[in-house]
Length: 191
Image (cartoon, rainbow, N blue to C red; front, side, top):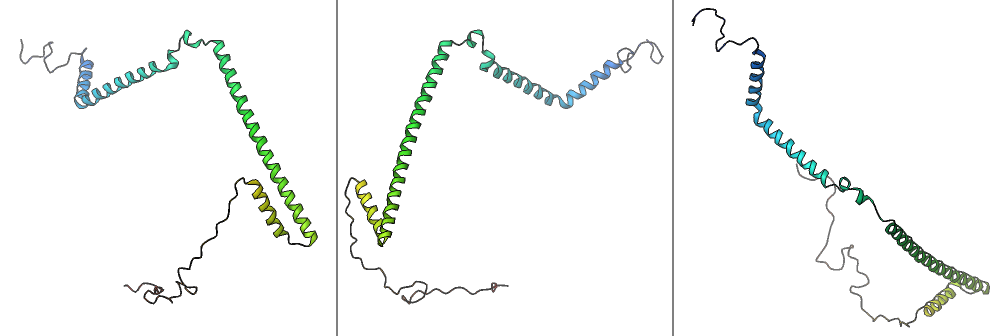
């Protein structure tokens, strides 16, 4: 072994011509892992967990599980369901028509009553009477005929007023102990 000579054997600090690129690559990967190793490991675990979760959700979807047996539906069940739906729609339409007829009848009755009142008012005007008084009498007859129970109006008991007739709280008169005066107008007196 030669100590200082320029022999063909490569020492530990010298690169072999065929492996020079591989050493550079290993050195770069080693420094990358040394600097960002934990971050890369954490990112790999997160990506793995996301892939697992997505694959489970896709497997749990009912559309992906439909097979040939699940797609087939009995035609009799479909026909029965459609007939029941049509019958329910027909029932609801009949109820709606009945409600519309009741409403129209009620509107006809109201219009007939208004027409009667107008005729009575016209007749009373032709006779020279006050039509408003006659209208009130007609309304009372209609109300008494329409209501089945006779309600007697209650008279209010005689109550004395709480204050005298000349009391006005804004005038400042009357009580003498309390008086209110508005504040001074304009900017405040402070600095």
